[in-house]
Image 1: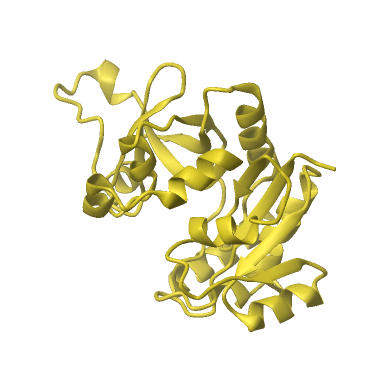
Image 2: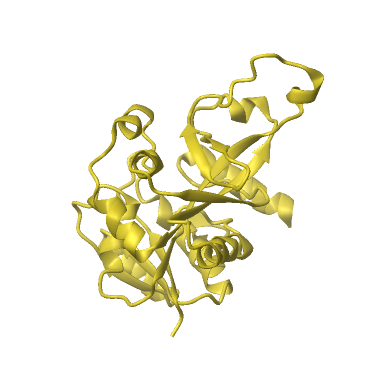
Length: 246
């Protein structure tokens, strides 16, 4: 029996693009691309957690196991916690269902970090960027890291702020946070039991709840991947990305 469960929250009723996880991308639902990447890791079972019977039905067609979770789940984290309740695995990796280009090695790196570092409650991923359009985009979340990879803060703003723009510090990259999380089971249980925190409510970033409560989040650097699917424009960008990759 594996000690890792990959849980894929797959909410059908997305506000920005309803049904996005079942939208067609190169002949397959977006969710199937994500599921197949998770499967390639060989880390353990892959479980889709959804509020919709339509997703359960679609998952069955491509051979995936899906469970129905409560419609009252406020977030993907709540959804995977509910889905993993009767599972034995001590490590749970949360891979968003709308990440069709997630690399298997990214998921493996998250699992390796959790297993190798007992101080790490939650593991996540970052990519380095110097792209101003990304850095100034509030949908691109920035992470501030300590030298050991521990997350000090996450923000939609440009952090850290470069007070003096020298040639040297212009070249210092920002860390773009990627929305994949690995949890120790006890850390996931603690996290979902906490109320939304002040900073979380200000920035609308749930990982700040963990930091405010003193939990340790550590980050692993990964290579940038293709777009996540949040909007109809993202779907077009994903199709373009696939064609360019071919």
